[in-house]
Length: 388
Image 1 (cartoon, rainbow, N blue to C red):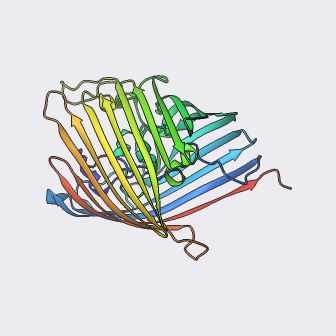
Image 2 (cartoon, rainbow, N blue to C red):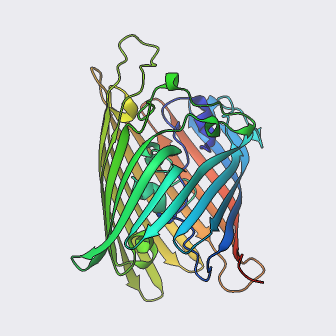
Image 3 (cartoon, rainbow, N blue to C red):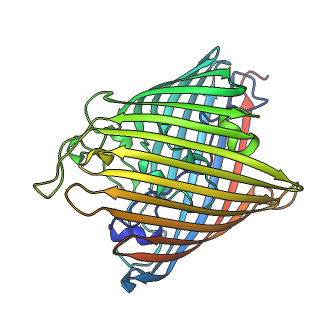
């Protein structure tokens, strides 16, 4: 998956994938699409990450890469929908300090599932990204979710039910998921191959069958939970996740595995001030036997966004405390400052978004200063198949 340019070192400092941009819990609730119908959403972006200063200095690099995400859906009836998400991006990291332009580009099927809506419940089954970290879903910007998305369990095979209800003056959503790691042919990629996931790779959730599960509870006042960050007054998420440990795959004999047990709490709020909006996000998570290993992790993430259309200014900070078994604890830090421009109204730039970011990433051994720029174009549409 796409990473910051300095991630090619393979070191712990920036070996985490880029998180997705803000997204709905279940995508493609398209207004105006009367079944039977089909539709699409396309996001095409070009991003440059320049590591202009680093310690050690050999980590400096410049990387230019595209990312194209194509989401497709087919709705035979009002209650049944089939969804696919296809991503093209670089899937193989360059060597440490190496400049790269359109290098290691591959295409893979990130999600392929069916959803059924039955009253207040929505059920989906197939391959999908499970629900856990709220910050990795909704934090705006290019690099804001770099570290926090490391706790996600993406590209899993399983089933999920989301139950919507009201209570305490808020709209609520309870989600329960049973899943396992995708080791099918869909875990590989075309063109540049990232390699098919094997049982021998180990890691949390990489076991036979649906051996892992998660439960999350979302609430929002003023909007649906999936829209709470942008439209709600105040919201929250509470979550718990269990992932069975995979096989031991460490090179050191003292390496051991353990079932991951994760707890999460997150909250959002927004403040309206004249013609601007301030959006705040906070999240903390504790993961015992993080990723099925012997160490635990404690993560804190916070974000403040000032929406002054057409500009949005974002400051975010994430810290991960690694509780290392038998050794001194270590910390990873990510501070990110961004400016995002999204043209308003019907202009020649409609559908575009432009962003620039300064990111400081640091752990005990390495520090990287990164300047990133990104241009993104979004396009969507649908067609009613029953029309003459």
